[in-house]
Length: 468
Image: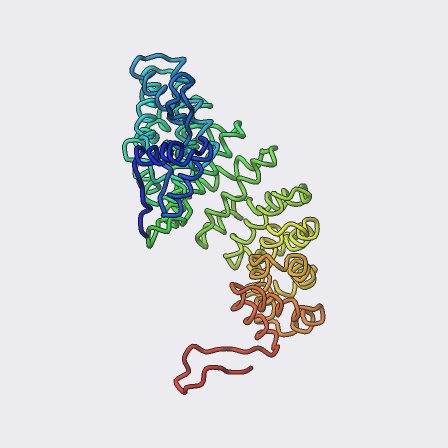
């Protein structure tokens, strides 16, 4: 991918002055015209100051940029070891970086990371928690959407701080900075893992089990290590990282916290974290053996009206149903009726519809008895209702088509039930209106024995289409 063009500050300033002097534009018009000119040429202006004020005495233009002002205040305060101005600069930088991406990119172009590294070290060495906390806040704000800025020195500092600093407020801020630095950066994730961050995060779950805020932050950070979201690398280590987390006894610890958890938001975070860790057949069974299935079904039963609980419990059931024995356990424990009830309660919520369909589809896969149980629990009606209510949501349509295929693949007696309920027309609608749903919809129609055009990429006979 070609790098965007860049120009110097002097070049931009010259165009603004020319617009004012030669074309008699006012300041606002001159700046807008200069921006438009360079943007049409594909120039990235994020490294420049594009706001000005006029000196009331001389009429000269002066740069006006709160990000630049904050960085200068931080730099000067560090040199002069002045705590109050330093805090003001850090807080101002956080505020400006939180406003928009352009401010973050501008700060990055002015070496803000190096400045914040110095500020973090300054607060750490002086044991000044106010300065360190403000520095970590500014760091998280700066790194949002640009975690690739982080270098090995900052990673080492954050990793060591996780191990050494145990004050609640500081620990949460450190974990947040680690999480943001790892989003869409496989390199950062692997470097943090090499620095021993995963055991520290897992053990901290028990240490801070009474702090809802920190538990949520730790769970979010652990999940980021299981992401495969960095398009710059061919293969990541999401699976390996999930295994490392489980090896640290994370499943038992998370379920231990869930057992006594009274905070619904925390319970939701614990559920979605478990679903990210259920990456192996034995892990799915371990969750059930540790009492996890009973806990989450009780959670769903008691809080069916909570949209987030409905979504996350369905997501977890979908994940652990990857184990064939667990599928049966879910059915035997009454999970099907709870899933269908959650889908009915939150019928207008596409995320619940999608995860509900996915859970039913996963439970149905390769299990004729489960398919029969799903039909008996009203699963067909729930799936088709989801398709009907969310015709423009490809995730819902894809999971619904997949669930339908699984319900009839080994249970041909279910075809008429689905067809009589209007399944064919809904699937055909998804087929014609959702390009990314085409293959799954076509497969569902085929398994329902409906007429469908199947195209072979190569037949060896010169014929390109086969009709079934």
